[in-house]
Amino acid sequence: MPRTFPQPGEQALHDDNGEGPVEYDYDLFVIGAGSGGVRASRTAAGFGAKVAICELPYHPISSESAGGIGGTCVLRGCVPKKILVYGSAFGGEFQDAREFGWNINGDITFDWKRLIANKTKEIIRLNGVYKRLLAGSKVDMYEGGGKIVDPHTVDVEQTGGEVKRFTAKKILVATGGRAVPLNIPGKELAITSDEGLSLEEFPKRVVIAGGGYIAVEFAGIYSGMGAKVDLFYRKPLPLTGFDEEMREVVARNLENRGIKCHPETNLTKLEKVAGGIKVTVDNGEEHEVDAVMFATGRKPSTKNIGLEDVGVELDKTGAIKVNEYSQTNVPSIWAIGDVTNRINLTPVALMEGTCFAKTEFGGKPMKPDYENVASAVFCQPPLSVVGLTEDKAVKQAKNDILVFTSSFNPMKNTISGRVEKTFMKLIVDAVTDKVLGAGMVGPDAAEIMQGVAIALKCGATKAQFDATVGIHPTAAEELVTMRTATRRVTPKGEVLKV
Image (cartoon, rainbow, N blue to C red; front, top):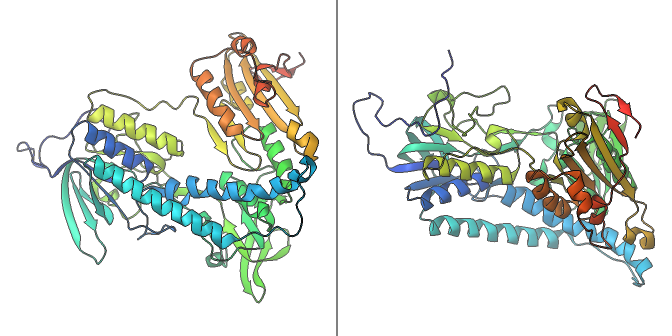
């Protein structure tokens, strides 16, 4: 029988024999110094707890033996990715600039190695910042891989093989996730997003396998820098799980930016050839390219850290099972972030780490709140959403749903001549008038949706959106000027005219 989850704050206060109080080296030991682990450890230390954290040695490409303080987001995820997105966006800006009167004479060249060097310099700086933040919070840092020996003991294997053992009243696992390669012949020839952010040479011909946010973002990055990009994904549209209409807009934008999309197509084999890598797909086509990227998902990093040995329950994906307070079935062990596979976003891991520390060390029981968590895909132009998609709203609805949409040519494009529309959408409960979801594909979508997320968190109604005076001329004002619903949808999914 699986053990039931304990109540929040419940803690084993005795040794394994139940013979009396135990003195521990630390009140909290954290395995994994990514965003969530660092936030939890610093917050706990701020409440007076004695805290330690361990992390693998730094390297821009993660492995079983390499990581770095700062974790995926800072070192090989959000931050370096956004730097490359910025770099790739200049290609389109140079094109658009001509119609705005800028005479760009001669060849415009791109230096990939300079960008990568500057990116690496920045993540090394941030790695140092995170170390200083931990030291300033009086959190003890240990470099090496952590392994749970028993519910209150962690071994840290340091460089060179030396193992240090520590005891802790509470253990927090925050080891994140890793990219999953496709299991096809020649898979060793491919790279993941880790390597994609640190290639020594710029690939002029790229195949990307996957239709998620990492795949479409890297497609935009490489294409914007001048590469020929082919994007293969299993579904009819990229970005499964996002709003259907917005997925269609993103697919059109990918094509308009010169990216060749191959929906419902899978890679079957990779082979090393004289000209690079030969890619075979399931429709028989062959493509010769310089690089193949697998962007087909990530899985929680739960291997080789002793979880099974102490009875921590995992789900079928390998993620750690936790209750609403991020506590595992083992009373002294918690887990946060991507290793739990809830909502795999850096700000969510930060929230979970804060809630854990306040609950266990601040005397303020607090559950993470996953309602109306905004997110963004930094394709070009970006997609950003908050709240329910139309499909999810209809499935959860007790009342009819009103759908408001707007598709328009941004003012900048009317001069530049770029064929690329902005699309916005609001999902509204027809009876309560509450805005249930919002989304946008277009320039600055993520910056705009952050403000809209506050409105949804406060329970804003469509009438309140309508009563808000827009800022003119902006794209964002369209969110407060959509007066006429595009359609009305019943809880049965019937689409009614309005």
